[in-house]
Length: 170
Image (cartoon, rainbow, N blue to C red; front, side):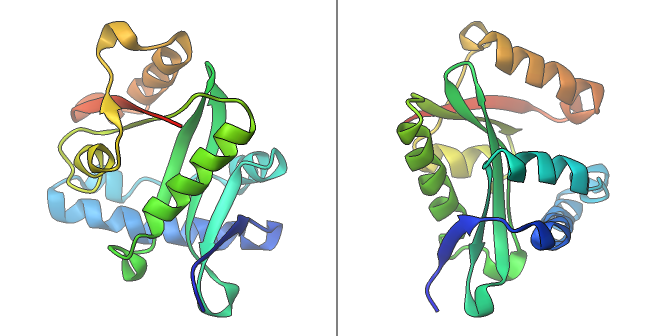
């Protein structure tokens, strides 16, 4: 069955948490156990995205989710809050397909770009997004909404490792 992207169903939200845990475990090999052990978004948070129509899953055989993406509008762009691909589906274009889908949705809503925050030195983070056309934003280019997101991330300790904001036009 080919890859399919669709809105997440309420009953699938626990599976999204499982995908997040599996994807996060890869950070342990990079010496980032605090990221590997970080709990995924709660069901209430995922439901908020789903209810707003901003939680999409990529599925394969049996229509089971193998990846997901949640996003929200921030300062005229669609901000990718989280995109996670189960390791068994990695390196198959699933993340790229989810981002392309999100870009299409952003265009439909009149938004001008996709934005995200990510680790600068993790191979499947900033370097990956750069290959997909995202560019790193300088501090002076951050919008108020992106500054607020970075501040929340710092409160959660994510700034202990180099992080960047990135943007891709849609």
